[in-house]
Image (tube, rainbow, N blue to C red; front, side):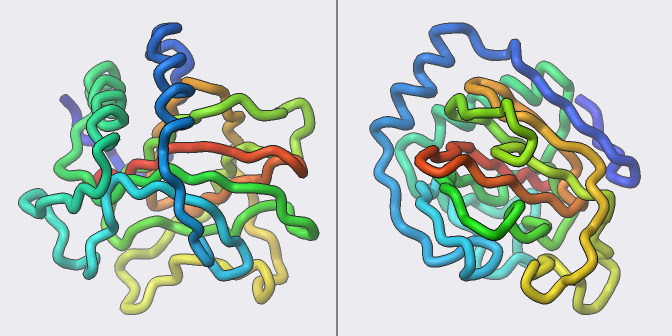
Length: 213
């Protein structure tokens, strides 16, 4: 296993890890999940449906390699086994699961994408498992955006989210990831990121894991 160098940007995209039957299991399982309405994600402008696999810790500073994740779903191990398989393939070392969630997002008019944000206050990885096929023929829909800006964890009060209603100057985009059923991606969680919204009438399903480095 190898320690990720978070001083440098990295991105892994894998479309071959899962077999045809495993992809079918993704579709089957997500159809059985109970989703709850969340009043907001980064800000209250963007409500969504979610299924919590692992709750975010009540205080971020308490989590370390010894912290016991608060598992809240019988489906956790199905998705976590995929994450472990991915990390084994790419020899990725991590020390704990911070949180895990399955998000179902829908179209929002008048916005290009969700507020740029960082998920956690310590060095971490973001792993995404895409759970459905959505329209990617137009660049303005569905992709995951990674911005060319990192959080400064050393600041006393670091900024974790840019509210698009207040932030007038756009943050430059570093890269975009196109979703596909069964695709798994991993990137350095210190980079601000967001997602473009699906087309009207579609929903975008993704499983998000934050892993403490």
